[in-house]
Image (cartoon, rainbow, N blue to C red; front, side, top):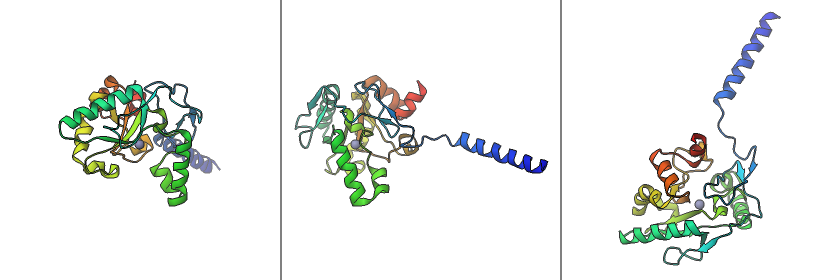
Length: 217
Ligand SMILES: [Zn+2]
């Protein structure tokens, strides 16, 4: 009897140790509703959700010199992106927004489209559930380079420039390679997020994600 108790004791300790070391965020669990959606440092991810009614109040359209169609960003992000794209073009690069602000309903349609066409697993890996997409903040955008295919932006000459210079304009590469377990999103070389110059520089220099930045401060 005592032996069995001892055994049970070790099993419980073992489980507790496993739980302790396996504290990685569980995506789409314990979801919090975001209380500061207008903050340029708002954290939107699989555990922090924007309300379906949230629409940024100062959306402006990106000049068609720097976007492939009518695309909107919050004013500060739009100004910063236009400057980035303008400076890049002077160096012979082509950096164009192909997706920017997306409202809740659009994200809902997009997610459901992926579920229908490619299955739930694919949708969860490659898209975000509505309310969990950073595109709803008006602070994020997807870009394409001179190869005109955002999906292979990594292979364009613009990618290296963007990776090492976008922080100077206040943008971060939001979903870096090797940090998928932290961000909850696969590596997306084309997706950038405006956080302002100071924080972007800090995140770039310390090789962080936005999630890690918030844990650090
Ligand atoms: Zn994106």
